[in-house]
Image 1 (cartoon, rainbow, N blue to C red):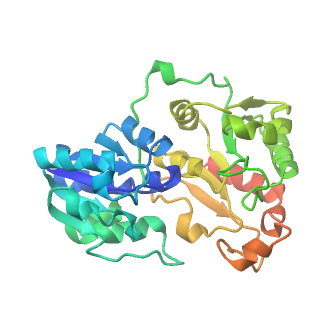
Image 2: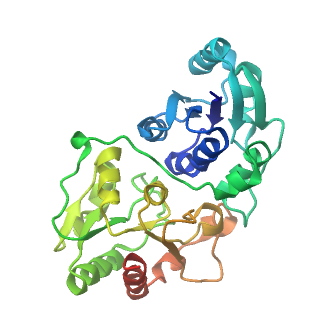
Image 3: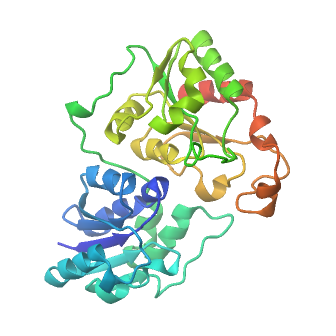
Length: 333
């Protein structure tokens, strides 16, 4: 049995985008492979703990803290001393996790600091991470791997779902509830209202709106519309259950987009300032589509143009009617 430690300490969506390594490891070493993960605490660690293919998850907060002063890193050191890893894969592109090569006992290591891998503007994050382990696991196995989750769900995870066919929409994103935060990635509430009316009126589809408890006040007007049900504050298993039974997800750029793709749910993603070539939906097996308004300044993520933008015309210019038409085409394939 091969024992592997994967290091990817990022946000929820980043963690899901790292899951192709699980498929690749299973193809390379067989189903007896034992896969541990070092991940961020909270939702990132929890989604991996729910995956039946993952053996153990180490929740790493303050990842730049030297291992001798970090309780969980010392736990990994002791664990790997007792049960050395055959392979450690560091999927981080920053130097914060370079010390894993020093304290995680292993026979083989790939990634930083041995290989200085960096993201490129027109290469998807998943493909960047695949380049880290392709030489060890093989290009054919690596290229064929996809984002995926095999979640352990039981009856207690079931969310009360509509009897009729439905879609899930995710209008919120990380940071939307912060005071003074510009909703650069947000689609206007009036656009969401019109889209929901089209879905419910023309197609008779119910709509489930997902978000955190903190986000609910920002989208309360949507919950008053006919045929709308709330997923605000639902658990990750509850959200996963809703996505597994949905015709599809309509979302802005957020971690829920990657969750749906990994579960095999079709995704229509609305992108504005961020770059879909870098962080968009990723799958060769699941139907998905990215819509952009096509203004000349997008993408502008992390540039002076984004900070200076006083009007998110990239999102305001994306009209509800073409989004609705794309929904009908994508979700009825």
